Length: 322
Image (cartoon, rainbow, N blue to C red; front, side):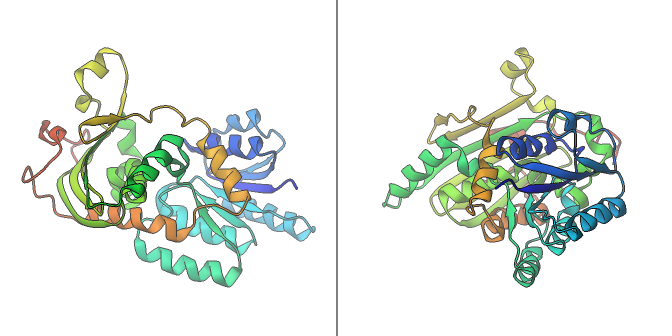
């Protein structure tokens, strides 16, 4: 049967992927909300959807819709990270299951409280952990899990996704709202690492600034050096020469792990799994949330020990002098 969706955060960067997933799974978007009205993208998917720029009017519409005997099956949440907890609670209160972008919350203890709300309402909270559905990553995990000896893999994770000065004027540049670089752009990679290589055993942060974070994490089956950045100046020269602004690579035991393709349909596949009752829930999100929380609250030790080579790059001043 066709499911009815409401969406909060319709003007966000990731919202079109959710709209497309709703459409591709042959379901319906009945209402959407965002305080910004730059949401013409909705016309590509659900031009008939009701849209609101005020939470109160969106709430009234959803309440009346349900009151007429209709059902909102899912509320999809694409809002700024610090609002996820509140919007999850809203979705549960109106009798819907929830599909929330990562990070599902900013602080690990919020998961425990949300589990209580989930149990009290009888509804389900799902999050998007799309890398767990990537065929190459599934294959790698199966390989690692089938290795029954004590081998630990040596892994270098490098992820640079360039952002301009606009990034620092909104919520993404505010560590209290986004969780900082590790949380905002890295949460899905940390989830991937713990899903493949097991629980985190120790963590050291070497560098942590407004535009990058570098450190070392030891997992049950891997030693991982990581470098994440939103500063284009940290891109390798050969990437700049190609006029590319993103660099994503994982080296495992000095061999590059290729997974650059296959991302296009992962949100749609996530929705299919959720609707089939096989979505990733609160407990699935806990390990990576603990990792980024520890990174955010760690005191960087500088260039000591086993650090990622990119950690040596010159640090940059905040563009606004903050």
